[in-house]
Length: 79
Image 1: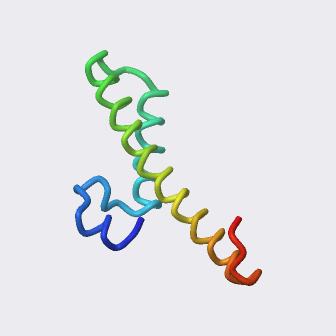
Image 2: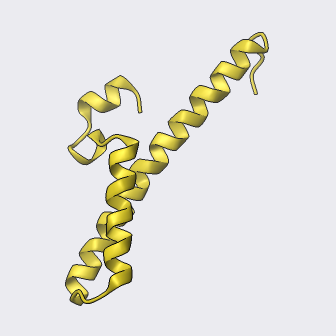
């Protein structure tokens, strides 16, 4: 996530990767445990989807940084 994205992001998007992953794990655990109403289960699922998207954006950003560092090390040749 770029600095600009962090400044203009909503509260969820400001979560670090570790925060989003930890909350996602908690959501999954609650869904697996069961005992929630259908409405609560749906809300948890939706929250989990949002958290998974945040984690994926962080991972994609990390991949982009690694690729850029490799290209720079290899003399700037594009991948």
